[in-house]
Length: 236
Ligand SMILES: N[C@@H](CCC(=O)N[C@@H](CS)C(=O)NCC(=O)O)C(=O)O
View 1 (tube, rainbow, N blue to C red):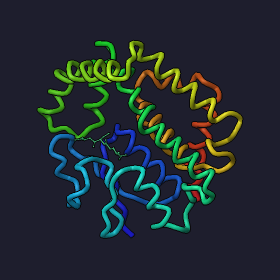
View 2: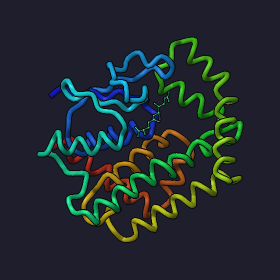
View 3: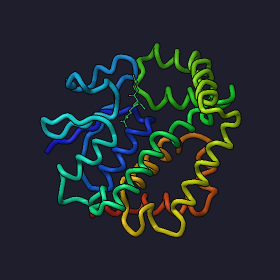
C-alpha cells in the first residue's frame, strides 16, 4: 500500500511519525509541505485540522501523530507493535507520549530561539530545511528571529518560567528518571513513548541544544539504542 507522509522537516510530531514508520519498517514517501499555503496536503475531512503530520495509506488519510501511531498498529499488524497489549503498560506508554507532546515539546522553542543569537541561528536552520518559496525563505531569515523571539518569550511566560535552558534540563532529568535502568521507557520493548521522545529529539538535532542530549550518558545511550533499531529494521 502506498504510504505518504506529509510533513514539515523540523516538526517534532512529524519526526515522531517518521520514526514510527522507520521502526516498523514501512516504506513511505515524504512530501515537504509549504508552511503557509499547505497546498501539498491531500483533501482532509472537515474535522481534521489543517496541520502536519498527515499520513496517507492507500486511499485512507490519517492525521494527528498520536492517532496515526496507534492506527499504524492496526493497519500493519505484522510489523513491530508500538502500542503495548497489556493495559498497565499501555497506560504508562500513553502517559509518557502525552508528556512528550504537551510538556517536553512545549519547552523546546524557548531554548531554540530564546536569545537573539539563538533566534538568528534557528531561522537560518529552519529556512534551510523548510519548503518556503524564495521570497518567503528570505523573509524567514530576516524577519523570523523577531517572531521566534516573541513566541519563545510568550511560551516562557505562559508556563511561569524565566530560564528556558533550566526548564529543558528539568525535563531531560525527568525523562532520564522515568527511563531509569530500563532499555526503553516501558521496559524491554520499545513503545510509542520512546518513539515520541526520539522524534522530538531528532527534530532538535540540527540545533546547538542537541549537544546537551549527547552529553548525557543515559539519554545518549537510549537515543542510540532507538537509532540502532531503526537501522537494523532498514537493513532487514
Ligand atoms: N496534535 C498534533 C499537533 C500537530 C501540530 O501542531 N503541527 C504543527 C507543526 S509542528 C502544524 O501543522 N502547524 C501549522 C499550523 O498550525 O498552521 C499532532 O500530534 O499531530
